[in-house]
Image (cartoon, rainbow, N blue to C red):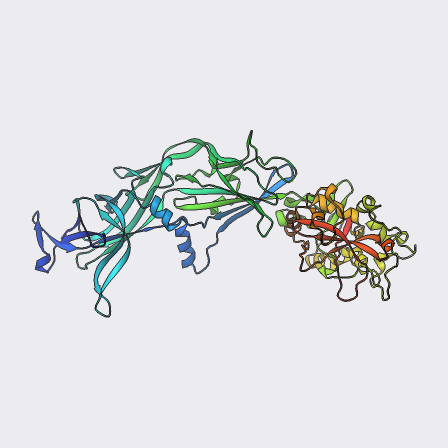
Length: 610
């Protein structure tokens, strides 16, 4: 059979493009040469080299499947410590290496190409990589030569490989890989920059200008860690480590295309974090580590990460304790969906959450993991504000979240007292924010000024009180009846109410980590009087279990009513109702008119003593 001689002789074109010349036997006499009594046909084979970014093969698979790439692989909630939990999100890291950085760090250096047929070694050549174009030998419709553009492998000496026409596997690797026969070895120090490409091609003796394309891939898996918190993460410190089982030398069998472990050991590697000094649109601060590179095969059981450590000086968690956490990939039950193979890249995000306590439909309390939303069996109905006082706030807003009035009155002026007690400012400011009589104002006749009216029963006259008081019925009609779930074990007999200013204080401190000493009356136009809280965290406590907390904005300016009443007549004005504004960075209470006709002004959030 005729053999094709792959020559390693190269020549430079006008534009500095190296061309690889193949000579072999043919019918054209000017192309025929005799060497070692063998007839060869002149061929011009080009080896085009594409450099795949991490996860490039995953993107190709998603495209062929006709859909967008699903980057998120795993979501799981785990407890960290001290009442803190985290939502762990494992996803393919879609960050791309810039073309400039890729050229500078990856494409430079010496390359070696091997040829195999049916697993049998056929030859080796060395070369380098250049970018440019070559003449394909064909003409376009106007009769002009057509050129192929790209990056190409070019020979550096005059060595040759003689190949009979047939199907071959070509293996190309850079100088970060060491060859010993068929074994290509990569040390962990070169895990980031070592590249290997493998392609199958059929060599023939009839067509000219054949092109072989390599997809160069990273030999490593890379992982980076991201921490997200509703409070700033200052000076984060962490490391990747393993007691044993970290591959320090991986061996690629060029003949078979398989990986094996050359050596392994334990390791401890410090991780450098880049912090986001401001909150994103969802209220999250973040800290993202640099990449840690692993050689295949990756031992998931020994792939560990931690945050903090002895002597570490990083931010504290929501309850004031330092972030100290050790995580192992094998803790994820769905680890099988992760393919920790070569050229794969992963981002593991730890979204820190406070481990809120919820009131369940059966009257018990539990954490997120006990709810149906967190993998448990219980249905949450409220979020606990105080365990000692057994006070909780409804997960959803009363009246379906629609606006309503505090009090209906069809005549001016608004000088009518409705509660049995009113507060004046500033003399009674301290008592005002400690007012815990929301149930009393809602359900007791003695809680009304006339000593007769039970505001919970007055849908037309006191709509905010009425809809807060009947939130339990709203639950039954809107949610539980549809799912066959009802309030039980005595909770069905408990009464909901419109919360007072003091009860909202517990909301401010327990859910938003606010400081009660910072909880004060806020003038609409004096931002320095706004109370600071972690509003995004409070909202997440509702969102994660299907609840709702309205976050206002200057454009909407929509408050939650309190049941506390304020006497402003000493200034020649009206009797007003206390109200709460919930913003992401701020929480503040103000006073609003008790009566609005159209449009309705505020919203009601029901509280309950369970």
